[in-house]
Image 1 (tube, one colour):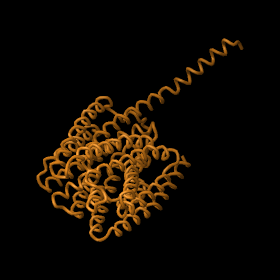
Image 2 (cartoon, one colour):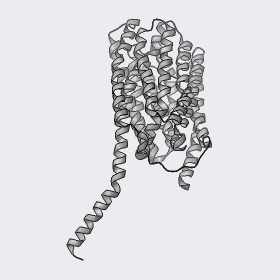
Image 3 (tube, helix red, strand yellow):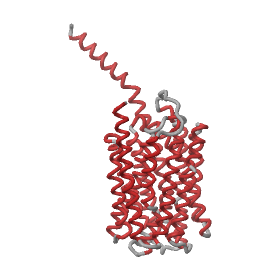
Image 4 (cartoon, one colour):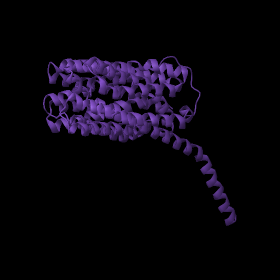
Length: 419
């Protein structure tokens, strides 16, 4: 065979290889761009509402509310913020109007935060806190499903981890900006109201990016190749067991408003540094989600076990530590929240058929949200009893989740080997 013929065959093989890889390459690239765009969208959203949440505890305290009342208000917000998700998950599954529902939820959420600047009494402030969480309940199930379509090409852990990293970048920037705003004040109502008013800026930017995302990717479901799946009723057993583990993880963590209230009330952290502490938590959350998202794709669910242990370790540091130990505890607490918001939901997409994925996310996050509410109420009541009782409750809940997560990981590994 001549050299020219050999070179021609090589070129043909190369072109054939590029053509074979071409569709997959462009599909992955398109999916990555979508995840990045939604991530930027979430960056500005988190800058807005996490900026507000960083100071909610002390702000509600100015109205004369104590630790139990603050926990109940924020707990009710979390309850509705998660409890309403099955409703909107089913609505999205039935209507397939993923974008309209997502847009409506974001508008409700982004409007509520700046309006806190005009709250004249605690019931109005409480309602706006709850409204913000309800907006998140409306938009999260359809948004997560749109992300899952892109994640099929990228890897679920990496896609959700990348999104969470951008998400938490906003959660870091927002509290830092609020800390700067409050730095020159004295912690009065006027100072807090000015801080909430400034959050209208990232809220407006977020809605603009949302419009761009909707225009650029009108049908995100087209990014995932549809494979015929058997008709199923309900969700598999492993889904419900996994939900039980997530419920225990969520119940033991506690919410930031009460943590912030505690750190300021006992004099560990000044009011101006409270949002800076929260920014540290969100920064660790974002970096951890990005790194461990890769590990999740490569090593499987087992990575959730040491991360749950780190959440348990955070509790005594947060509630009993001084300035430095509390800061370390807050960082570990942030890592735990990142795991809960990115890696744990990422696994759900692998457990249920595509046609029922939105409903699955709604049910899963609703159960998780109920656990946050109940855990928040219990921790709020225990706060008036003793800090040690909070630690015991939280550590027991986190450790109880580990055998469940291990069992689910084993089942998922066995199922993968059979396939």
